[in-house]
Image (cartoon, rainbow, N blue to C red):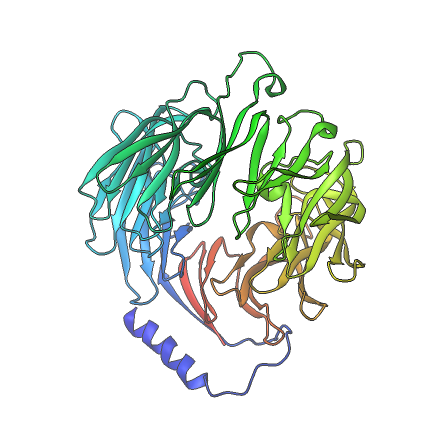
Length: 539
């Protein structure tokens, strides 16, 4: 396998001096070199490191396996395959540390184990007699937090060093949602502190907000009876509602209110923004401005206000009647100049409302029939879905448009565009979307809108929406295209392809009937079929 990997690298080096690729088109005979890494039948990829160097896979993945699948990890740099042990199932459930040196996975039902690439050891890190439900790695990869629970969402948090030997208890009766543990347990960028809600009093995320310091294993209570919080990216500011008292049997509109606080974690300064309000923090701007919404969850939209505040100043009302999404990212979008986009005047019958943009005290209407939770800024352009033809939650379909902050004008980008796989890539200055959506096949035409040039381009036809994956550098996308379905009782044929997302390059066909894949930089793809695990390099 090492020789095969070396040969692929040598071939890449030989071709490095070739002429630039032609504009994006699908070649009839693409140059793709693929080798089978492991002949394990029924293999499925269950996780991969951020740089895609390491790819974890399980086999066999039969519908009703007699024994637990075997977990293996393929190292694309060395070409080696390491057998780790057994994994509870074949669903994507393995999580790598940021540096790719540790891998956490369910070794059996309710048991979380961690494998170390440095030592090759596997250690059980969840507590015995209860279920391991989540793992959160520190940004520096030197430690991790493990949540174990007898009954979710109340869990015990343990911090483990990367040596998988030393560990301490962080807190008990902590709120942890196993499907979004990174939202409930926040670790600072320098990996020295951790925020969580503990001392739960209900099955809801309602308890005492606590700050744990790794040095000295010290904990202090920040707020009491807190239903949630927002911390700035630099971990210097935090906003939360405290003093909330849950009333059994009553809707949140009755009991969801308290003291809304903005606190400096570095200095300890506390500013009370609202004395008694149903406030929820949405985002911190880079200058420290807090954007928040006032209105109980599930309450009348007409009573909801969008507001901003700076520490030490009075709140400023941006607008009223604002639609609350399922979280900050689906409620408001912020442009680099501080402009805020949101939906107001929501009509539940049409599942639409006015998409408004507030720049300072100036409020403009970008669209009058916008679909909530389907908009975002890229540079100075607001891209949004409107004129919905289907409002199925999370998979709305309508027309996609772009509105300019500078001119206040909009243009259509596509029709029959789905909310599924609508991707706002601010770093690359582009939006990826599927139009000509076919809900029965869950497929459409993948297109790219480049904001800086104002151009749209077709990436590929008949792309299956559920498995599109970008390379770490965003230069290419692994896609699965669907062929004609001649027999409705059998799935359509599938083809794995690698599509360039720049203005040049050719779509490369990787293989047929693949079952899972991981896309790396430089045209490398690791994938599985019923015949095993393969590594491919495209040119």
